[in-house]
Amino acid sequence: MPEQKTDRRVQRTEQQLREALIALMSEKGYDAVTIQDILDRANMGRSTFYAHYRDKDELLLSGFQVLFDGFQKEYSQVASPASDPAQTGKELSLFFFRHAGTHRGLFKAMMGEKGGKIIQDHALKYLTQFIHDHLATQMRQQKDFPVDIVAYFIASSYLSLLIWWLDHDLPYTAEQMDRFYQQLVFPGIQKILVKQQ
Image (cartoon, rainbow, N blue to C red; front, side, top):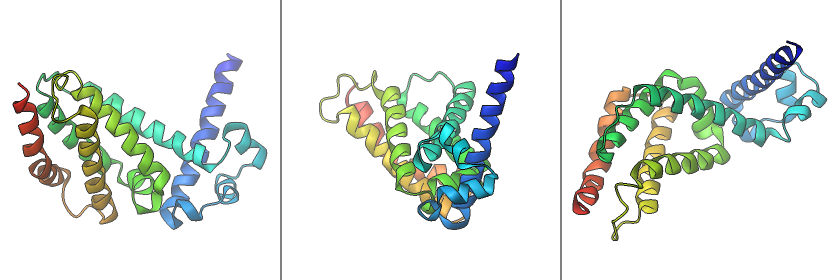
């Protein structure tokens, strides 16, 4: 029982630190935030911070991991087991736009222009691997377009559009953004996938 209380206390402390960082990022951008700013906002001491994180980058990436673990869990609950990788990609893009729209404040702070390059690089790496895993078996025989390149292209174009959407305060619905994205990207991807069959 004491162990559960300790775990809850640790989780609560880490959540308070993440929330403080995200609020500050929304106000002045990641690069301008100091550890002292985070401590003041969370009303915690320096030793408490360093008991959990090495630096603010590690705190930021822990928030990213929580965000994307939640996304992946939600997506796995609603995703249809489609064998067509293009269909899977279409479902994924719409779900991700909706997810970002629902958590717009959090996504804007983390992924928008105030989020800093570190989180955008991490998001690109994560999403590229996620897409790669979905395409790998279908593209095994493809010689003209290595799956690494296709996955990176899909992920980078998607994140660019998502960041634009967040930084412009969501001027279109998630469904409209998904339609724009699919019209821009999926005809070319579909040709690659059809060509290999």
